[in-house]
Image (tube, rainbow, N blue to C red):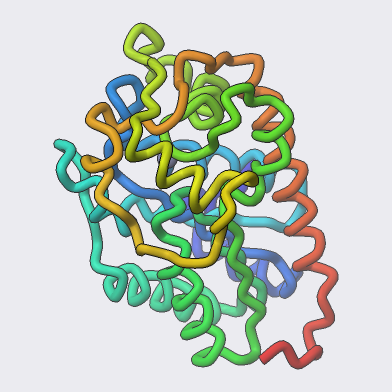
Length: 265
Ligand SMILES: [Zn+2]
């Protein structure tokens, strides 16, 4: 079933929007950044794109836009191949894309973010788009939140951060041909551990009290892995993907059900 916007003609799109004005446009946003010595630079984009397409195949009247392959990745810039945008650039791209969609009649948009470093920026983009287009419902979902319950159930390392057990498993389930498991390993350095346990882990007594933006990865891990990638498996990945898709489909159904006239501004 075709769900990618780019595979339709403009004439088909016109007919479709006339028939289903409450169709949802999904904008996946990824990153091109280091993912350790075992995962490809495009991991976030590849995964979020695949998951949006799979969710759209389960839920009718959902169309997936071409994935934005660049994100806010300045913290990974010391690793070759990493590309980064200024937050303002990403905000401008996302708002312009949503403005184009809405000009043609889309009234419900969901941004699905595949890279944690984009969250603050995409929150601002959603606010700006909503201000510019008050007649449109704009949601913003983050992969980490969509997959959180599944990660907690199926990961055994207890650390959910970057290029780790969960993310490697997910990629094994989506693009196993791109995963170099021979290079997957545990990398939990002292500085990372102190940072993670203080500000992220459930046991961290200062969890959520302060944010330092995105600390440079090179200060926390020389491999780029933060967690234990060696524990990854395709089977765990399949269960994580199922959990993720279940959550994403629920968000889409919710977005469809929201009363269009409800003032959400
Ligand atoms: Zn990632």
